[in-house]
Image (cartoon, rainbow, N blue to C red; front, side):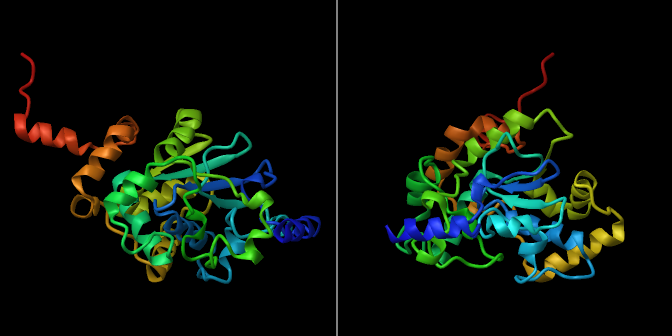
Length: 290
């Protein structure tokens, strides 16, 4: 009751959090990444590329490259156009052009689990195997990615001051990894003018080239020295996780659970299945047809 009344007051003052219901403008551009996919790293890179002479901080990130989960409708109205906005969401028909960062879901599961344990949303006694089977693979609840570190921590979903700024306590939902990825690939995958797909692993191994692609798409100044400056600034703020951590961290049963459901999506985005690698090892390489 009190939250509802407080929300009404915030709504009329335009202090309610924009969330998925943000009024989109024709020239809005979105950076999108599923929670645990390196979205905040991408956000740092692009935000530093926007203004290399003024390194990104927790103070200036929101006015420079806001996300859907911390800024009010009034705040969004003050952002200089064209706005570049960060989101975890599945595709929305009103979204304009977007850069979508995809990451191997096996690594996403490990990263997501560790973030949850550090933030308190996953109990310390909860194993990674349990997390994958009971939480990571579920689709009917919000995955909590809006509180990824960097843009200002939210005390908790139950915090009155924050919830009183949410319509019905709801922001939107990124759904599951596979649903999120396919919502974008299915709708925009064949339209390079509206969607730029970037793999986390490629951004990690060749950041200069991938950030150059992003700069050209947005568009931002893609001069090599500007890109290098943005990379160095982002590197000093945080170090991205190396790809492939799942190979030693993720139990075999969890790998099988992920691949059995999302194998086709993984293959479509360039991720080899562990089951296929095992078959190749057991059977040996197939000889070419004569």
